[in-house]
Picture 1 (tube, rainbow, N blue to C red):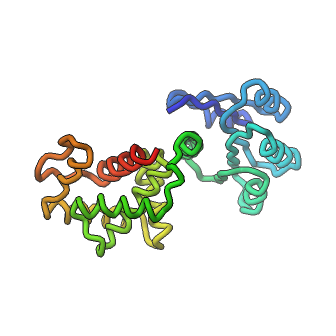
Picture 2 (cartoon, rainbow, N blue to C red; picture 1 turned 180 degrees about the vertical axis):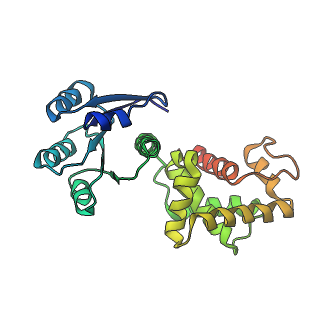
Picture 3 (tube, rainbow, N blue to C red; picture 1 turned 90 degrees about the vertical axis):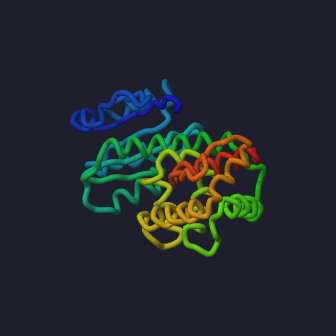
Length: 247
C-alpha cells in the first residue's frame, strides 16, 4: 500500500477526531478554506475530507473547485446535518463519499484507502480488453475443474466475487465490508448469504476431493489432499491466476 496524503478541512474538534497516525496515512489538518487551498497547491493530497456542519456557499464552491482540478483528489464530506439533501448536493459537486453522525473515523479512512487503491489498480492493470464472456469461460473451467458444480448458488456468487477481485484487486483485502456486499447487490441478496453460499460451494468441492485440482493450475502444491481453503484463499488464488494470465 502506498502512502496517502489526506487533507482535512474542519473545526478544531473535527480535526482532533480525525487525528490519526500509522496505516501509511499522512494527515494534514486545516480550519480555513484559504489555507486548505494553499495546501492543495503545495502538497497535492490524494484525498480531501471536508466537514459539513454549516452548508455555506463557500464550502460547496470549495468542493466544486476541487473537482475541476486536473489532479483532482478523492473527496469526502462528513457532518452532523440531518438533511440528506446537503450531502447529495456535495456529491453532485464532486464528493465521492458522504457520512453523517454517527460515523466511525476508522471506517472512513478504510473506505478512502480502498478507493485510492482501486484507482491505482485501474491505472496499472489492463485485462487486455478481455471480454466478460472470455473471462467467464476461463473462470468456469477453473471452478468446474475444482469440483464446484455450476447449478448451485455458491458457484454464481463465487464466479462474481472472483471477477470483481480480478477487475479491482484491492477488494480481496476487505471481503466482508466490500466484496460480499458488492456480490449481494448484484444478486439482490444479503452479504451473509453470499458468504455462506460460497463456503458451501467450497465444501462441496472438498467433499468431492477435487479442490486439489487447483494445484495443477499453478504447478505447485498449494493445497494438500483433503485440505479445505477458506473463501478468501480460493477467491484470491483464482483471481490472481486470471490477472497473471490476462495482464
